[in-house]
Length: 388
Image (tube, rainbow, N blue to C red; front, side):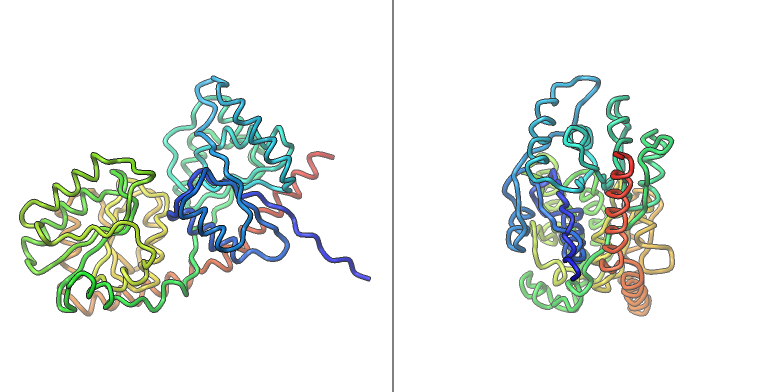
């Protein structure tokens, strides 16, 4: 008689309760994990991510994990002790940290609980912090980086030591592509009162200076001077109500001539596929970008793209024609790229086709989930061997 295989327990820790790119990617990956894993989640509190997890039937614990043990001080050690107690209660075989920022606390807690840790690096790191924090990073069983730019940054900061972490693997973000196919752009245009003949240019991102919405609006003003019938939309909100001054600045820019009355702020939207399908051009003038997974969504829908040529963005978009990469953060350069797309339906159609093909070839979440599973399995195996 063959005994059933008992799934390994994996505890996913998120420092974000809302639903942004990294959380969307994790949802899609978990949905496509095999039966070899039994997931449970830790989130800081109520929010769209927490709600989505409960709607899918996942068990969720609420625990707010701060940024880390900083600059040689151990003031957050009590938090690490409480998190370690939570981890012991849940008895996972593995812990996964979905955003790297809180690695010092989570790594310390996993050390105390004697559970292996996988750190997922989805952002460009600003610094390697102190010696203690570097050592806590290096004791992870494995690290997943979403782009070569991210992996190079991790190495350059001295976070990778001899044999530690045991593996640093590059796995790009993926998406359940069928969720973005068949978007109904006409519905969004009716909502905005924008006819099919009106050029519509948009951006989807959390509202913060790094993402570059201010550059988008400066670019939009230059496009509007040459194409007076063009309209522009921004989708996204701020994280936990932050960046009020930045948002006020964006609204002030949108009120100035020639943009007055031509910019739509749509806030957070669940119907991203429909919004993307309504666009004639998608623009992402980000100042930094580890990968920018919304570009996957735009490619899947088939929207011509203009994006910054920085960090890992070229790895996501490629250089084969799915989008135009702008080598500097100059609103005029972005405006020229947008106008070239709007002025050439044939070129736009070619970009749409190339984008869809690239998304299907590289960013289907199903094979990427299998690669992620392999990292999880190897991390558990390696840690078990080290304990013998």
